[in-house]
Image (tube, rainbow, N blue to C red):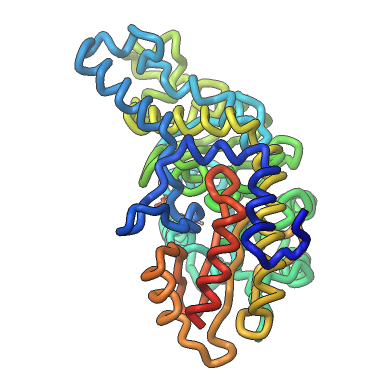
Length: 425
Ligand SMILES: *Cc1c(COP(=O)(O)O)cnc(C)c1O
């Protein structure tokens, strides 16, 4: 046993002992010009293609070619109930009951549909609280909801910001905002994992404290789904939305996920923007005009879904199931990212600052590395990494995000990343 962590032999040993090492074979890994695998660390932005996703999409194209309209009803995976084939796995991924989840639409669209139900401002309670550095799409969505309800944005948008010269969100500040404005806040919408810093928020505690003040709570899980373990049902979260193309590897713009808690799905009178796919299945095709919501998250569906994209989701979910689901992925993820932290600290501790929290409960797989502090040109370094086959992701003003993904990244990938990074500095 080699005990020096800073050696390739050590990384090779870790790979040999990794029960998920063979999962990499289930993915298409992009190649460098010389034909060797890229060091791909952007699964937080676009997950790699699972071979099963490709197969499921081709199978669907074949069914369409062969069956035409009859594909809605025929074959092993008919299109009419296609989204239902994904429900159980989607529920497991986010810790929900099957009736609480549905794969539909895209992420930002789902945020709006959820706000149509869960942001219903009154004279007294009209504010929405988000984080100051929310993903722009979420910020735009929230602002436009306020405007849609004729609410002044300056007066009704509360921002939870990190303190001066800090990157991470501090809970004391949130509790204080809730304490101070609790009776006026209608909705809190926060990320499960902050996209820029990789900070995991304590969703259970936030929900509990907000609910005590009568505030609805929704989470954007774009960077959490497929990354960390979630228990949305148990945490009593009102709603959540996530995309499927980051850690869920279903292809750019693929169909997103949506969670609505049991206590709300059973309330079919709850206000919503309705469409025929949310209508009671047994009478949907009677084509009558009285909307009857399905008493599950499916009751928020609008259209018959893009089944080609759902097929990609199916292949991706099957790949995750094959790996043993989130408990197995998270177990490896912690080891992978721990190894990255160890190598960075040992070899580059003076040049690179990790802004992501280091303790396991407060991070997923991603580390956000700040490089400008010591006068290094971060953007130039990012470009140099690319030239050496390392794909990371650059976020203005000065952060490189690195996401080792347990499904297809290896410990050797991490060893090589740190070695190449050192050369580039
Ligand atoms: C990736 C991401 C989005 C992207 O939204 P789409 O509607 O899928 O284009 C939105 N919000 C967050 C927090 C994200 O990480």
